[in-house]
Image (cartoon, rainbow over all chains, first blue to last red; front, side, top):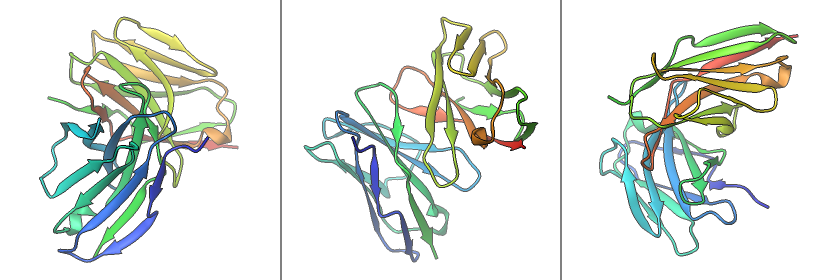
Length: 111
Length: 111
C-alpha cells in the first residue's frame, strides 16, 4: 500500500515564477492538507481540501492556491514566487478528520 | 491566539535513558493534541495523541502527559534508542480542520 506521494521532490525556481506541486493521498484517504515548513521550523498549515473544495485555509496569501481532483489527488500552486517561499512543502492525507499521514515533501528553492 | 511552543530547541540523552520533551500551548479551546516525529528528509510521522478529557496516554515506549491547568504537554520516551534521534513536534487541533504545529525539539541520542 503506497503512502502519500509527492512530486517533484526538489525544484528550483526564480522570483516571480509560478510552481505547481502534486500530491497523491494514501489509499482510502479523501482529505488532503498542505503545509509549508521553513528550515528549522514546524509545519504551517496552508489549506485543506475535501470533496474537491477548499475546506479551511491558514494565514497564507491568495498567491497560494490549490485543487483537489475526483481521485482525491491534489495540487498546490504558488504564483509570483518570493524568496521567502523557499521551504519544504508537505502534503498530508487523512480519511475525514482522522490521523494525518505525511508525504516526504517537495523542497522548493527560490533564487 | 494560536501557538504551540516548545521549551527546549535541543535535547541530548544517553542511549538507554528516558527522554522527556516538553511543550506549551496557548489555546485553551484545543481539545486534541498530537506528537509527531520527523527524521531528516522525511515528513512528520504520528507517534501518539491525547484528547483533552484525558491526562495521560501510553503507547509502546512512549507516554504523553497533558496538564490543562498550565496548558502543558510532554512526551516521555522510555529507554531511548539511537533510532529515536529526530525532531519532535507537538501539535494541537481545536476541532477544526487544521493542525497547528510547534517549532520542534531536536533529540540527540548518544551511544
